[in-house]
Amino acid sequence: MFFIGIFGIESKEKTIGEINDFSCRNCRHNHAEIIKSYHFFHFFFIPVFKWKEEYYCICHQCKSIYGIPKEKGKAFERGEAEISYWDLKAIQINSLPYICPSCGRNIEEKFDYCPYCGEMLHKN
Image 1 (cartoon, rainbow, N blue to C red):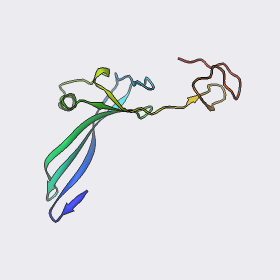
Image 2: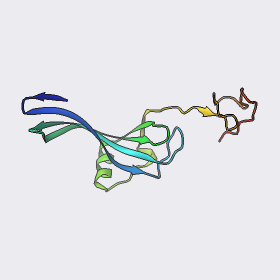
Image 3: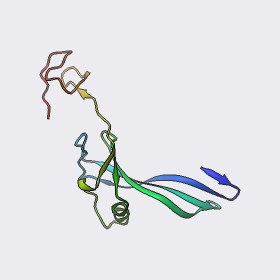
């Protein structure tokens, strides 16, 4: 935030919606949140104009972040379009630890058997 007397510049993020038919490329979870990020100039705390508007999607499960084209994000915000798998561009993919279903310990995904308890791992 930057203030000079009676005007200033700020950044803001706000949630503009959620999608339930989303399929995360990382964890295959189907719920995500659509976020709008922008900078704005204000005069007497009244926003005058915005710039650098960006839209992105955050997976509820693994918190991976996907960018959305600006035109598609604006249309979604107005309720005129839906966000599909093909609209998403990976920005930050967060890896989830693989957990042994038998002993509950974090292990590397490359194992066929848990190195701690010896249980066979059933991978999807």
